[in-house]
Image (cartoon, rainbow, N blue to C red):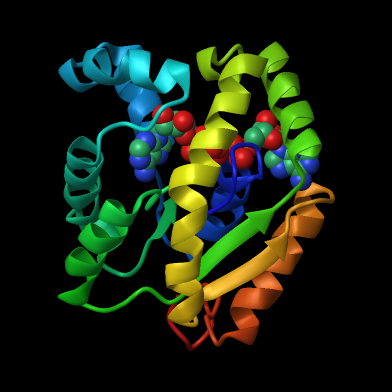
Length: 193
Ligand code: B4P
């Protein structure tokens, strides 16, 4: 978890490879549907471009479907999900059947650093939701709807807070150390990720 630009997608790739689990990014899944112009993509394009959240019912269904695929049976990393209280409740029901969440990683970074990263990405990738107006809107949506759910996971003792400022490798090393300190093993270790 973390505000837009905190490095979720970037770090998800590292964690998934180190712990040998699939990284499941709801944002990537939506962008894929949008670029392929699927029925779902057409439905969510305007929402995602504006920086609003896709309705919980659509997002939850998509995650349930993805987690039911065989590669997620041994473990998974969710990137950008859950983002609302409704999604937290839905995920609780989904994982209660065969295990539990082991950790919730929160990446922190200040607003100006985030805007600078995302405007830089806008130049490189031209994402429709990386305009300054959409970025500020996404930050507000995050603060209103997602920041409160951090408390839920803090109370459960699952929250791992990691400083997201620094090079990509420095942040990746911090995450790795924090997870190992919690007994979550890397691929090849005896403990399961
Ligand atoms: P996401 O794809 O999750 O978009 P994001 O918050 O911008 O994170 P992202 O992973 O792309 O960026 P990152 O921080 O890694 O969501 C997009 C949209 O999809 C949402 O606005 C919403 O509409 C919809 N959506 C997704 N999930 C949803 C849900 N659960 N419910 C409802 N709607 C949902 O990186 C940003 C940039 O920073 C990159 O360019 C990267 O290269 C750079 N960067 C990363 N780490 C850096 C570092 N250490 N130093 C310098 N730059 C760095």
